[in-house]
Length: 209
Image 1 (cartoon, rainbow, N blue to C red):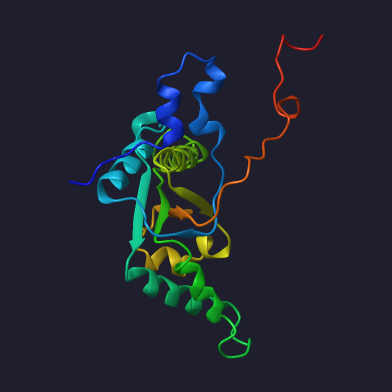
Image 2: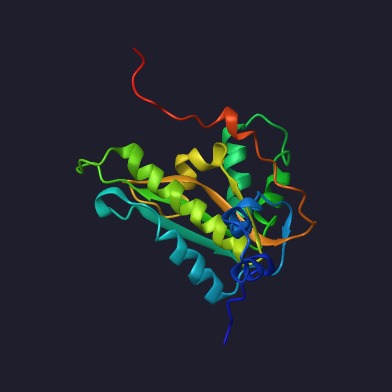
């Protein structure tokens, strides 16, 4: 049976008496990883990654998360689709000038299309439903890292292309919001680049008088 193996940094943190800051290596060391190669998470690990996604905050219990897994031979079909869409956007470009886009589909052994099922009759604002999907994607990236893999969240023109939305089977009330590329990092990680906290955090003491 496939096993879930926690990354070494997480195992080390579980048995330490260090201050809380040192108990968060799986969060503080996470960063986008590229390029990615085999292996991808095994089926049991992938289930755990999606379970982490489904723990995300969800105002109204609307459960807006929709994920489409692209792996194996389907990546080649996805590459064909990327080329077709690029050709359609720029029909006057020389023939074959978009073939390089096929490589994007093969840049990781596993791709997850991120979708949001928007409930437009709910009192929950659409932005909060989209944020729930963003929170789920972040949970996935953290789980991917915790299991010793790497992930990269990509958006760009293909994420907002109606033809891509339709080709992946998303419905009329669903929105494609990006792709997670998942696999084993091909290169050692450099230190996570974190900005200075003071530029992003402040304390509020009441309205200005």
